[in-house]
Length: 556
Image (tube, rainbow, N blue to C red; front, side, top):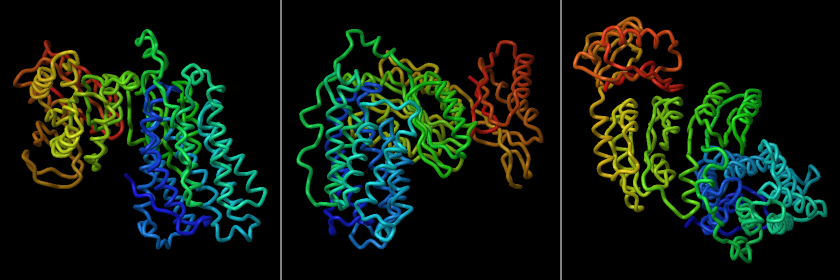
């Protein structure tokens, strides 16, 4: 359980108070997460709101602790402005789900006020600490509403708005920071109690809004951080009830978009405005939060590839997470999927392709291999009793093995298939049989991956010695099974030479994965080349998208 420091200077709004607020909120969300998950019915009954809020708060707390470790021991030299900015940034980069994304924007709203006007100068500006906090809560609610494409009342937005209004009233009456925090907490609790009457889905289920419930926990932690008094009770206690199930579970799964897509995006504000319009036409539950060039994008869609592509048009998306709601809805019914696949892929297009095939994906960018924690998180998101992990590269096998070991300790049966290229992962996915036995499925996927020779084209960055001779900077290198086999001057010519060597020992199917800058004409040329020389060989072509190699080749 996270450390829960008690305030050393009650009613003092400083960096230490922010650190205490963060730690208390994280601990309280940890206690309430399962109960909050149990009442999650809107916008998707996927039983993860409490978990998403907790993981977002955990990222925010980690961001604050890592940026300013001295805050943790009560000897803070960090300013209030620096602390709240680090806290909000940590939430932004780690936001999970609809509720976590909104929480991240709420914290950004707080930082926009407290980060611009340090509390020490607030009195001279005509605002006491209570008034400053009240304005921060008001800005937080305003920014959260603005971040949601189509705000709905009866949700955590309503709770945030009510808390802000109550805090403003206390601040206008010259209240202290403690009094503003208590007013906001009471206002949030009162608003939460009204949510079943505002949103039909909640009324039918007989529960309060799950996101709003988590937000009440956060406001309770704020009051505790400033007053030293513990809230009387967690707001969800006694309210968590099983979510009523549809007589036809399949009908429930078919309601709404099939995928949740989340990614971080580096883009200008103007580009994000255009992105909002494009994503709004693709799906629902659209939330885009952030600013200053960094954004967290969340949307529910039926076409995850299109949602990722929209991000590519707007700027530079990364940490892309695609989740299929079929697995999430099974979890909402208290079920785990029997089996799932987690695939590490080196390209946004490949991530979308594998996501559409039902895999949970982890996007890897050149020079930035995923950590054990990232792969373990993907295994957890798959939410299955059995998981097949496709690392997609020899250099990732140790990381995948460590993540698998930790997942096994949590009761998940995990098998790591030693795929050394994305094309081997595609071959394994093609024969994946979730209905068969685990052992048979792993054997079949391993055999398919092992029977796929893999090639890659890359551009030499400097003169160097290779297994095919000396290459110069700018030469095109054709690698087969990890070794340089061909050195050429042009992409298409070198690819043809690689195909000749790979098909020399036979093959039935050629898979081509094109990088983002490779024109369609190259694919057409290579497809024709294979057809002319090998009439019995089929060819399939995919776009690897941003971060993929210029060309990947698979021969099965």
